[in-house]
Length: 471
Figure 1 (tube, helix red, strand yellow):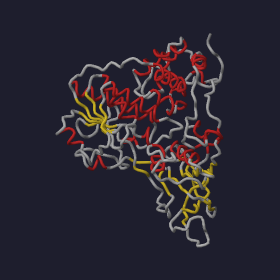
Figure 2 (cartoon, rainbow, N blue to C red):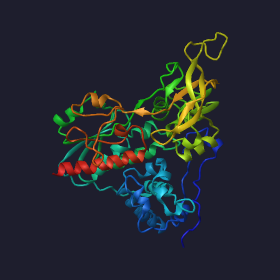
Figure 3 (tube, rainbow, N blue to C red):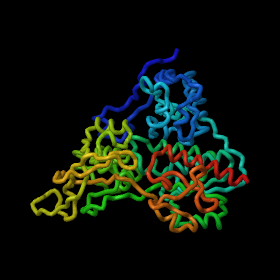
Figure 4 (spheres, one colour):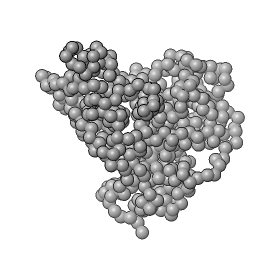
């Protein structure tokens, strides 16, 4: 019988005060009984509105129908036709604003827990499937993919399934891009990413790490000397932004990019790690997106005594996922909303014994804000309240106000145009750049965005590359 409950089955998770002190995954996942019960909430709509909200067009009602029947591997095979990273997507995609926002069950209650079901199916497959992955027959064409983040892995996977000889070039020592350096272990265990990469390798995708395109080798050399007929650039947006306020060069000020990379990729949270990172004390994270939540919750797990989120708008304008905000609040992180930093304060008092080295953070001066008229994106513009300045006592400041694409590839590639924010200019329908045979997608084009949007761009480019090389 259909499950007509207006509410999703809750996601089991660690207790807040327990998980705030460890790096184990917060959500523990559905059991098979809970997954079937949640799947029974799906009405299997004929017009499938949920699919229209999915950037990679997963056949959602079809895979959920298989869950209802207890056919979990069949459900996985349906998902994997559209998505190269189902276990990742089930954990980090903002389903609430995409597929689930279109769900008919959401009109008079909560939508079906599509993301939770996708995660369940992927985890079931990874735990139980022992069969071999059939490597497609080669079509004789050779494609290079720059960057092993979500857009690059998706493009590589889709092309490999069509028989292309694909090599992925990754600048870091580990494949996964932002999935390994940006998203914390407690949200996305790195063994999950490694498993997804291994699946692509079984399809024939080759991964070359420690290769910095633009330094080790250029795009032009890939095409002119190494025989790659097309190139996809999915190098992400790893260049951090700062506010350009006094004190940002003080010891104890991080970009969120650096802070999370030290923790996630370099395992600074392990006692035997040789990667230095600030632990303990009072921490402020400036920003309100998912990266800010990740940085704040990581700082807490590293032993911070107090963690603040400082954001210049109100809770209604906060861009982070609702689930991540709720988890942060449950874990004890304090939100200082309608506040904006104007200066980071450094050690200048010889009687202050907390740190006897000049140039260390001791606080941050902020100003209170109020919301005015909407800006060009429809969000109410924050305005300073004159004379409302105040100081927060701090030991560490983490800037999480966005990132930009690294200019290295553009500066070493002839004929590749970028916009005024450094994003590679592409044809929206295909991902084609201004250089023939070169395509791009994900954060390298849009600036920092979501994993699933980057995957959608990789999928679009793979289709276009296939058409280009099939002519």
